[in-house]
Length: 159
Image (cartoon, rainbow, N blue to C red; front, side, top):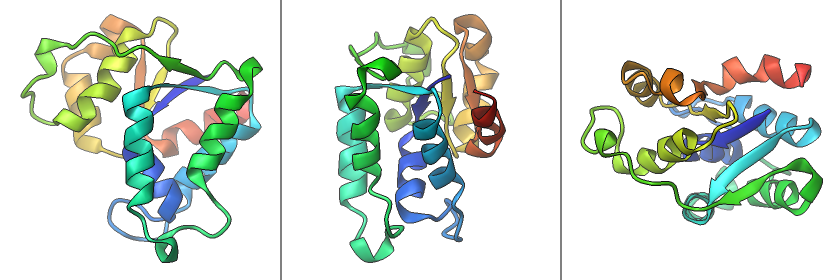
């Protein structure tokens, strides 16, 4: 399976907390499941930079012990057989600009998902983003899915 991880998934994996601040290792489990299975990621250089900036803002005291998210991601990209790839920036989708629920930071992830042609899954904890993407009908038109980490976890074990 191929994935695009929204930056909120990366932040949650690094902190071990959900968006409400409660302890939650779902995103840690997701990242581990991606690494341990035959899965890959797609990112642009800008998205990679966003991941790096967000993780860099997290104090070591707030990070999950033993999980270096950026190191795990680098491992995925260092194994050429996995198929993880840095993608060229996708074209902008004018219909996303100003659409309620899709902020400027989210657009890069959605546009990358739209630009793929392989049934990629955009994984996010942002319920407003999921609702907005689905209300625009983007997954059906562009052959991708948008799911929460909780919904993706069971599929990881099935490969």
